[in-house]
Image (cartoon, rainbow, N blue to C red; front, side, top):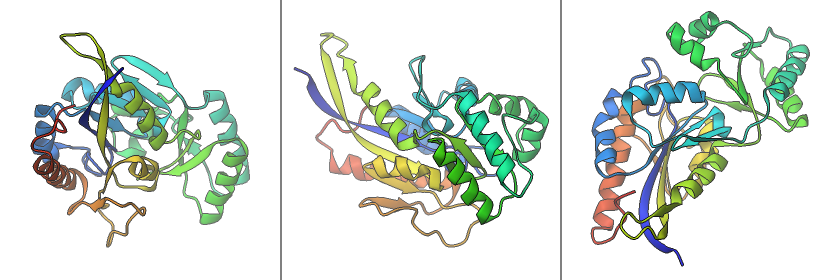
Length: 280
């Protein structure tokens, strides 16, 4: 029989959440990131970015213990990758149908050059190349009207796909969501072997999720503690969802991330001084 002990796991969106919307820097979150690492709390990146982008980001920074890319379509933990998203062929077919039906020019990350991706995102060219290495999703490059978005969503739905609005782009992707991928990652994180006895144990997690846009809602819904990061250039922040334990960070981007994570860890540590809730 598996024994249980409590742990914390943190799931975070990147652009506009942990990474600054304009500079892509996480420097302002460093105090909280260092604290998370010191407490051995698993930190999972959950992003519309490609696995190539996430792996490259993690090579230099070693911030993340697990990676969820393409809005939940790709999951990577301990070098083992699972693809839950649709095939490239299905994504391409849907995009072509949308392109023919809407009233504005439409291209996408899978159809343009890295130079165009760089111009659209502000990324360096080598980063734009990695952003184009997509397996099961495709950010659209267009200037749609609400009617165009409705048409695209209808076409995607008929093909069992979704059109999800992120911080910058509408992304064509599968029914897998950040929330579903978070649940799967927790399953993979949960089972481990005790170092000394090699007996199987199962962790129970207190989950913290942080995000700033509608495509983060499924992940925030799954979390015990949801943190909404305000948009950097937006007006007054309205809650993205109804959640019994929703926190709205005091600032945007990594500054807000840092403040929210530190405040929540302070609360959890004070509440659980005599328990095992601190370590992942």
